Image 1 (tube, rainbow, N blue to C red):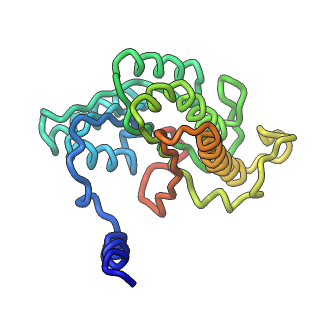
Image 2: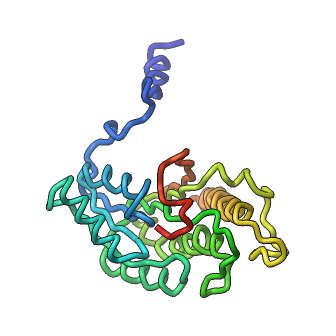
Length: 239
């Protein structure tokens, strides 16, 4: 094996701790959007991006929690961080449209849209204002619409779409229940959640394929699994 190949292989090794935020360089001049950013993994990701100099827009449902989160971030990182909040309820597609309109009015670039917000294991069937089973409505449909509305600016910015999926898609029936999308017949909080996560991951693969066929290599699309995390996800609330 040549020295060049050896060097290339060594560059791919992150060490015993794997990849860590310390490997990130300066993110000054870059703009990130995170849904569900006032707690859990969304909040921690916000903290990391802001600590590297990025501009961050939090997309959350609860204004008071968002204000409190921003205050906490400024106490920890300093008043000069560039962080703001736009209200968006993923369970209401009109709210998603309104938020997207505000985003496009305020921002000139989107380097990454991180679709992080989710609800999980809702014990009893709930239907969104648009008529969707709540977990599919929040986790999938809301994010799908947001991605579509913001895609032109993401493409212009040569940005990324990152979907926080879950290995939980394997827990359920491992298919989309097209004959009963709202689970009217035999609702199960776990199965409905798994379907919403499967829909997210399938959407990522489909978008990757379509971008490749269209010759659009500037936009990158990813799905990730956050692992087991101590967050509010299982408390059946939208973060």
